[in-house]
Image (cartoon, rainbow, N blue to C red):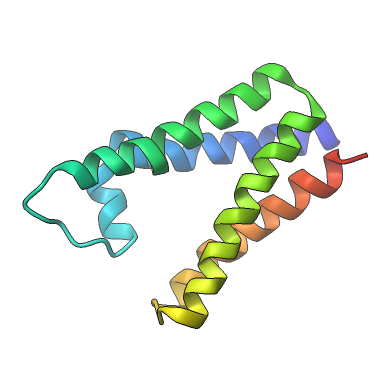
Amino acid sequence: MIDILNILACVLTIAFGLFGFLAPRYTASALDLAPTKSTMGLSELRASVGGLFVVSGAVCIWLADPMAYVMLGVAYTGAALGRFVSLALDAPPRAKTIIFGGIEAILAAWLVLANLT
């Protein structure tokens, strides 16, 4: 059961990443990021919101090692922490931030706690 849930978490990670990788304009809109005259933002989305997640999820599935899943969980921990600090300091849209941060926190908790044995 742990293996199935690990793979599901990785597939979700890959799916989230594919939005940033293949549809950075859509992702920017979903994340309330304003366009600028530069296309550097699109490059950043493809890299940090896209490719990083696609490759991380895929490599975890490929390695099938508990510590690989833990490291993906650690990455999600950092993302969730960033969201919740932002709630306190930046006043982003509350519902959207809580939903995204909650998903990241759930994935972080599962990947770390289920695989750190």
